[in-house]
Length: 84
Image (cartoon, rainbow, N blue to C red; front, side, top):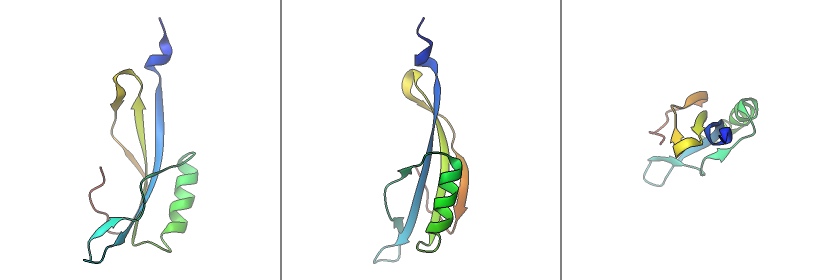
């Protein structure tokens, strides 16, 4: 049996938000994949100087069937809109 197809991996993502012309909070950039939680936290701390809202999170992915598990927040700052 190939056990590699059942292994889990974890995405660590970072995203910042800004106000658009209408005053609506929108993503400043697409979620960025980070090396690990520490790198995401450190980068997020830097981004709060330039953006109104910042979030970093981990999201386990399971190779079998492409399932995605519940995310875990690593860093959160500001009034965040719904993040998918």
